[in-house]
Length: 193
Ligand SMILES: C=C(O[C@@H]1C=C(C(=O)O)C=C[C@H]1O)C(=O)O
Image 1 (cartoon, rainbow, N blue to C red):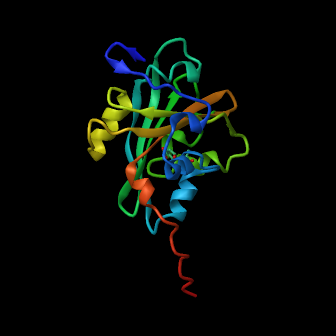
Image 2: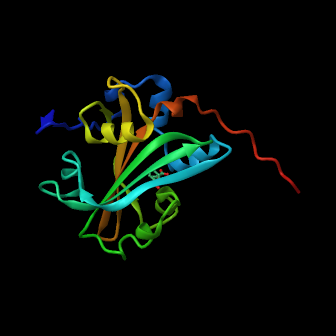
């Protein structure tokens, strides 16, 4: 499905529809906070913020965030890194109609994980997950490539989900990078006492 020269992703309500290899399927269907799971699979976890700025939302995002056509939104992009290696590319959009009281911590997150604010706030409602393959031609493919490199024929697996709080909503897309397949549960941290 193409609009202009950019490919849109075919977002599906079931993970099975994207036919990911089993280990990737397991990551795609992670319940609860992905940040928490990545922390459990690394000695050192880091959110590397790439940017947080005003930008046009992607063509395949507009409807999901209640816009009739792509408009300007607040956009945050990060790499979630486990032991120095990028495991997930995070892309979050918030309609500009949402106010600071809808998402009080969003603008000040910096390198703290958005997940830590979403999953521990009882006012936040999580929507249905959707899944897609991200291929060359999709805008997120180029953004991932710009930060981690990779071949033209790579297929990335991604999921996305709308979160609501008061009148506000935000859409978080997580693109799983090949490194995630190498992660093993971290050894229990030594008790130094
Ligand atoms: C949504 C979560 O938060 C993660 C944190 C992100 C951020 O800080 O921008 C982006 C994508 C998410 O994977 C989560 O932990 O599940």
